[in-house]
Length: 126
Image (cartoon, rainbow, N blue to C red):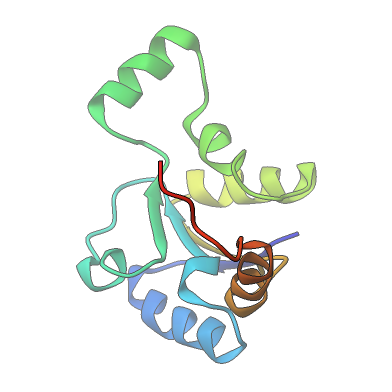
């Protein structure tokens, strides 16, 4: 389940992201979602996801042909309940910005340790 933060202005993004990082989230555990593309290059150059539900021109044409909902398509990639998804969709359609923070089940250190333990002792040439 994700931690959802609703922002009414792009000016709030940096402070909100800093708070989430201070709470212990890593950059790759944070996503910024809005209806229209946000121009925040300093965030886009990190591991954080910055997504717009309007998508590219080809995304919009494809959705028009398939009847797919842009907000639903983006939010489906996150671990949200049906109620959370509806709230996020409503807020995005109202022009607000959503920050989703979700912890990974394993930390990078735990993953690396598990990978190193499974690594074969010898490497074989092919």
